Amino acid sequence: MYELSVLSVSLLIAMGFLAGIINTMAGGGSNLTIPALMVMGLPADIANATNRVSVFFQSLTAANGFKSHGKLEIPDLKKIVGVTLIGGLAGALLASYMPAELLKPTLLISMITMAGIILFKPGVVAPPEGTQALGISESSSSIPMLLLAGFYGGFVQAGVGFILIAAIAGSLRYDLVRTNALKIVCTLGFTIVALLIFIDNDQILWLPGLILAVGSIVGAHIAVKITINLSQKTLKWFLFLMTIFASAAALLT
Image (cartoon, rainbow, N blue to C red; front, side, top):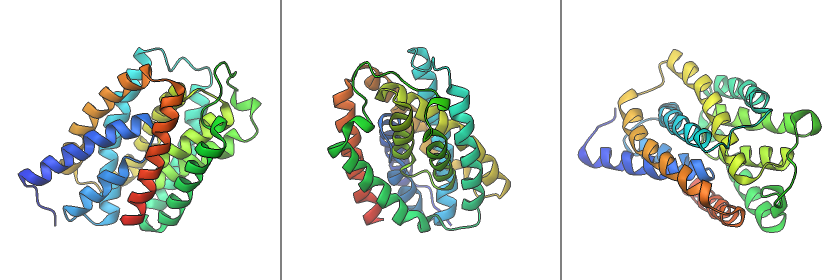
C-alpha cells in the first residue's frame, strides 16, 4: 500500500519535472520516476504501469511543442509511428504478465552500446549537417529497428528514448532535433497502447501517476524550447551524458 505525504508529492513532482526534460531531449527519465514510485511502496509492475500516465502527458506536451516549431513536417511520420505501435502492442502485452526487472540486462546493454556509439561512431546518432533523411522504403534496417524500439517501449519505458534515437537517426538519418520530435510522437503512440492494456488489467494508480505528470508537463514544455535552440553537437553530448546517467541508474536500482 502506498502513502501520499507532502514529501512524496514533492518528490514525484520533482522527478516528473526532471524526467520531462530528460525524455524530451534524450531518454532515460523513467530511471528516475519508476524508482520514485517504488519508494512510495508501489510494486515494480504497478510502478511501471503508473509511470505511463506521466509519459503520456509529457509526450503530448512535447509533441505539440515540436509541431508548433515545424519539426514534425515529416512525410513518413504515420508509417514510422505505425511500425512502433505494432512493436509497442506486443511489448505492452508481455509487460502485463512478466516482471519489468527481467529487462534490466537489456537496458544496461542498450545504454552502454549507445554511449559507445556516440563516442566512437557519432555520425550514427548525429548525422552531419545537410545529410538527406531517408524514407522507410529506402532503409532496409528501419522497420526491424523501429519494431524493436516499439516493443521495448511497450514493455518498459526506461531507456526507450535511446533505442528510438538509434532507430530514427541511425537508420533514417534525421538530425537530432527532428529525431527527438519523431521519438516523442512514437513514444506517445505506444504509450497510449500500453495505457489501454494496463487500464484493462487494473494496474494503474491514477493519483500518483497524475501528480508525476504535473512535473513532467512543465519539464517537457521547457525542454522543447531548449532543444530547438541547441546545436547538433550540444545535443549529442547531452545525449551521451544521459546514457551514462541511465547506465548508472540501472545499475543502482
